[in-house]
Image 1 (cartoon, rainbow, N blue to C red):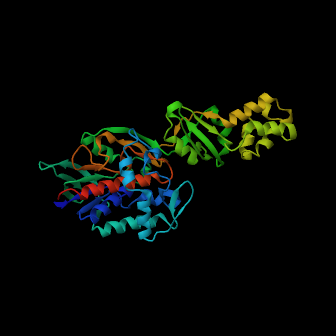
Image 2 (cartoon, rainbow, N blue to C red; image 1 turned 90 degrees about the vertical axis):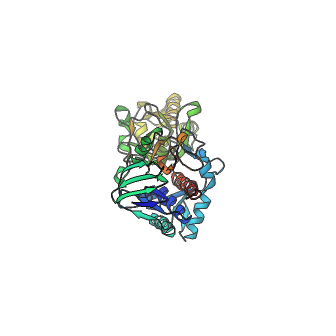
Image 3 (cartoon, rainbow, N blue to C red; image 1 turned 60 degrees about the vertical axis):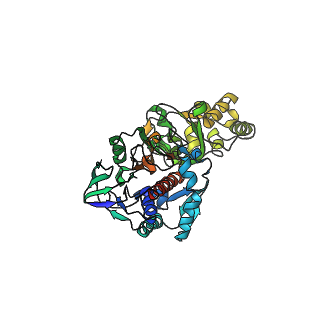
Length: 405
C-alpha cells in the first residue's frame, strides 16, 4: 500500500493546479484521473486558446460574477488568489496572452501552453500522476486515514481533494463521481443543472425564427423579475434549435423552467424615433427601413409576422409602428428547455458550500476537500470559472501544506 500526504482526484484545471502548489510546498502528492488525457476542458475552451481568467474580476467583490446558493462563499479564495496572481505565473513561464474584450484573457498561441505549464508546475513539486486510473472505492480507516481502491492498487492518505468537475460535456469524461463522494460522507448537494448553455424552443411560437439559423447580432437580454432580474449586453446567435451566443449562455445560468426571457434586438437604437422619422421621409418598405437598424434577415422575418408591417413605412399607422418598435425592443419568449449537459460549458449547483470551509475548502468530513466546478460556485462566461478553479485550488493547497505531517 502506497502512502501520500494528499491525493487529488481529477486532473483538470483545479486538480493539477492544487497538486502542483501542494507538491512545491513539500507534500507527497498523487493525482488520479479515470481519463487518459489531462485538462480536456482547458484544451477545448476559448476556441482552443483557453479564456483562462478575467481582468475585470473585483477581488473585493468577486461574488458579483458568480452564482451560488451562498454568493459570498467564493469571496475568501478569490480575494487571496487573484487574476493578477495567475497572470504573474503565466509570465514566469513566458506564455504570451491577450485581452479579447470585457477583461477576457486568452493564450496567444494555444491552450496547450497552459496545460504544459500546469504539468511543469506538478513536475516541480514531484507530483505523481496515475492516468488512466479509476477510483473504485474510498473509505476512512480507524486512524482517520483515507484508503482508496484504485485500478493500480490501494493508496492511503490523510487528505483527499475532490477536483472532479461537474456533469458538463460528458464526451470529455465528465461524471457525477464527485457528487457521489460528497453523498457518501453525508455532505449536502445543491441540485446540479446545466449552465452557460444554449436555450431551445419549439412549437408554433418558434416558426417565424426557425430560418434565422447562423444570424448573430448584439442584444440586451434579461430574465427574472424585481430582485431576481438579471440582464446582459452581449451577442445573440440564432441556431437550428433555438438561441445561443454569449448573451444566451450568460442568461441561461439565471433562467428557470417555464419562465420567459426578454430581448432588446436593437439596444443601441431609439426604435420609435427611427421609425417615426422614416415614416415622414421614406418610401421604402418597413422591412427595408428596419434593415438599417437590425440585420436584414431579422427585419424580413419580423415584418412577415403582421400584415400591417408588410407595406411602405409611409403608409403604416402610428399604432402599427409603435407595436413593431415595442416588439423588437421587448421580445418576450419562453424557452422549452436547454441543450443540456452535452453543450453546457459548466454545471450549476454541486457540493453545498454550507458543508465547506471558505478558507480551506475542507468539508465537514475532516481531511476531505472539494475544489473547482464540483462546488456550488459557478462563474459568468469569460474566464471567471477558470479563476475559481485557480483560486479554490490555491486555497486548498495552502491549507494542505500548513497541516502537520
